[in-house]
Image (tube, rainbow, N blue to C red; front, top):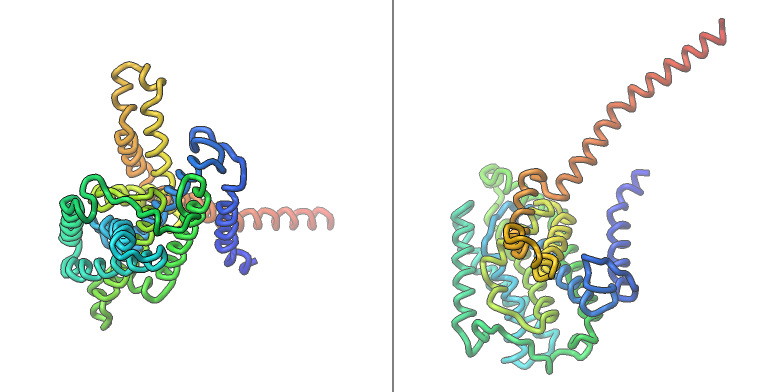
Length: 370
């Protein structure tokens, strides 16, 4: 029984991945959630985008939930992956896979440099330094019209990308590519969380001075986690570049990092599956609320209701406030608390029920003797 419980998360994870892999082959409609059946390009594109941001939220949760580092510059790694792939293909004229490798290496190098500097401080100063790096990256992208495309963004050189990853007809392949990316990121995050590195990162998060007194190097531990999280974010940026056939300066902005933070808090800080749920839920709400805001139903409402309901960011902000107020542990944290409370109640009531059964049996034996 204990073995079954130990392998239950693995079995559930495999089943979820298999179901997700089969969705493009099925005709399943979710009105209000997806724009059409699951095999249609519009639905596949939306689900692919959900997976990209789920992978991005996972990478940020590794940094915030495991190591306790609040960064406002995580989008810089995401943008490095997206822009890195586009620049590698456009100016180096390399095939797709070497281009992906160059983009990932670029993201890791940028993370190593910015992380080594930012981690000279901690707490709020660390967050401010990462914000400064993100703003510098955003300015660099916006001002270099000839290289990065400036405000118009950078288009994907489709001629250097395999045909099976280009065009609306190949949205199914892009969906599977995004699924592979989120699975890879999840496995990397799982490996870090369960390794000695993850244990040291959590210990550093709780008491960095004690880790230092034990002769360990918390600076190196946090830097490694920072770089690994940035590599995962860069991989998500690569998937975003392929899915959108281009990228924009907003992919490097601090606003995107705040959005990722909201995803992680919504799902539950410190929970891997919570980060995935938060990323998917936020992306779905962001996309579908935008459609709802432009609908005739909202347009026909009085101004008191029409104005706030026509702003998706307002509704997402209200949702975030409600989650922080009533679900402080996020979706995953609340679910785990409910399960733990139920187990505690069961463990307390079980011995009492056993004693009642024993008393009934004793009474029955004494009655039989009489």
